[in-house]
Length: 132
Image (tube, rainbow, N blue to C red; front, side, top):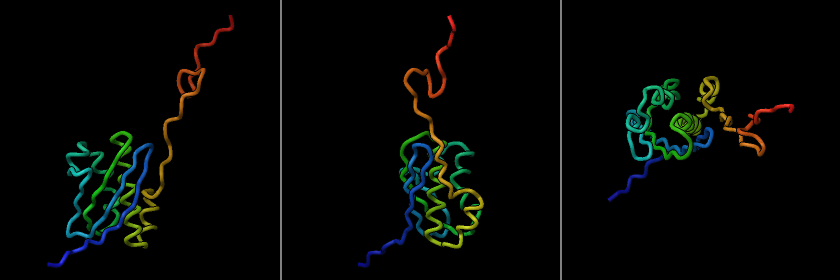
């Protein structure tokens, strides 16, 4: 009995504290499996589903996308998935780099919450000051 080995491309996408480990496998149609759930059941809103699918809107290729996402909130997880898918597509076909880069999907958005400093209420908010 032959064991069929599937060739896949792997990449990591990040946003804030979310990390998405993405695997792309060539397939007749594009499907998503995120933490062993379908895209629609993991990202319940249409906006988050659109963010996750954005790299495929730019290109005609079809893949089975399987991802393990951890950390952060649901919105940053969707953006981390988008980043990981875009990086994996570059690993599959290097010519896509120009298209995906122009769309802004390859940029690692490093903005994150600033840490709280001692003596302050939040990262920058100081207690009320009075002269006397």
